[in-house]
Length: 322
Ligand SMILES: Nc1ncnc2c1ncn2[C@@H]1O[C@H](COP(=O)(O)OP(=O)(O)OP(=O)(O)O)[C@@H](O)[C@H]1O
Ligand SMILES: [Mg+2]
Image (cartoon, rainbow, N blue to C red):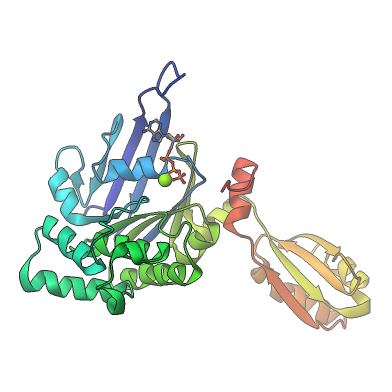
């Protein structure tokens, strides 16, 4: 079976805007494969090219170069088959404010070719998923931003797509709706749906994704499983080991232990040793043994996980812009 998403050398050059001689490339040759059953996060700052990439994937924007296959169907040659397979949740909310949540779902469901009892059942199911069953009859313009976003997501799920693409669905909403959306993504995925999720929030990519692609200036600058990405850039775990007054001696003992890249006394007090290791947890047994062999007992250990922020910083030299 072909992968659910295959992006090949995808490029987009926009027409020049005022003051530009020639159009700029917003997407500069993206290659990406997404397997069935994944939650894949496309993580990147404002203007990185996330929405442009997604717009090409769902046929809203013609690529300047390259192609995308969804389930083996080319977006250029077979856009109808592609539309059947994917649900899109756009960054901008696209709902009728005077209609209720249910009426919106019914309207968009009909556009997808659903009707009758099937449509009614799908609306019931989707309202349950997005947690708005109780308030389905209220007008959308009376909803909070977060509730509107949830209806927006519901629209993308109506025709039970194999792949759902969500473009920054949690920007600017309340924590409760954000929680609902993240949990919805996970439960949809557990039911077998593949999810492509774009965000500029590192912690969301961390929580949700199997694999992450970091995009900046129209290019994928890192791609892979979170753990692999972190290791690849040489980001290290920090172990904070509290041993009491013998900390200085512990530092001496731990120098030269295999798998450890650095040992110092921790800041702000001399009862704790700070160990830097490529894989802190893997180094821990050797650390414990070395200290134990020398009669030093460990009071507490804290592992500070390296994170995607560190990866992004390493790659781009700056934090994610908001
Ligand atoms: N219609 C357009 N015409 C010209 N340039 C555009 C157009 N749409 C987007 N761009 C430019 O393309 C680049 C990528 O924009 P895009 O909207 O894809 O980024 P994004 O990653 O979705 O950002 P955000 O997180 O703000 O949504 C930006 O430099 C943007 O200014
Ligand atoms: Mg965008």
